[in-house]
Length: 218
Image 1 (cartoon, helix red, strand yellow):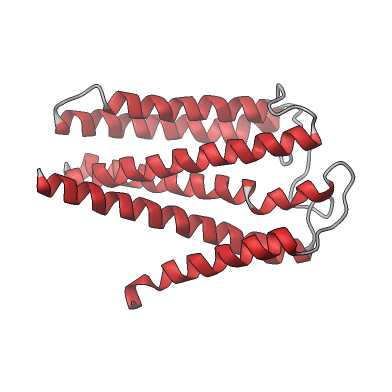
Image 2 (cartoon, helix red, strand yellow; image 1 turned 90 degrees about the vertical axis):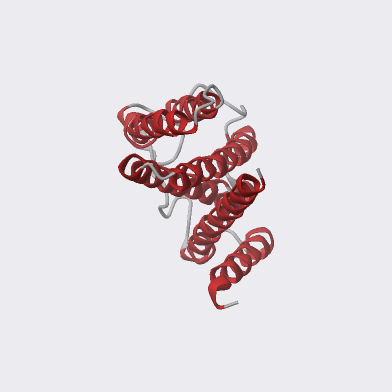
């Protein structure tokens, strides 16, 4: 039990987020209205996705340094969870965009960058499936992972800021300011970020253990 304390924290934080995120009071903002509650779900999912991709990158680098296939296994499973969180983030973002912008996927620099990023990591999974040799698959996948992350960061955080964008935090459109969040919301938002991050880690570690057991059985 002492080694699973963080799992209990994850459950508590997500329960707290779900309850107060859906039932708590939120500021009344023009256009956003009740849809502002999505900030507790859509944004933390993306933060968790970035954390999972960063962890996957670290394991990819460790594999290249050691040739230990366990690092490759951890790298791909953290990427799998990141992709799931990215899909959920896109789904919640599309619902939010439908309400606030009138279009589930308008032509916006941030959204287009997201689409490209997701395709890059889908290609990563396809690439892995094209090799039978474990070491070769792991080595090429690790290099691709590093290159994909190097492209992902500018696509998500830099390029959208260089032009006009509907998305908060890009193109001069402020985010996490008094215009779209108050202190009451921050008391739910930040625990939500931690909770989703812990949930993503939990999912990835479970997948790693399952894969290891499958390999031992083979």
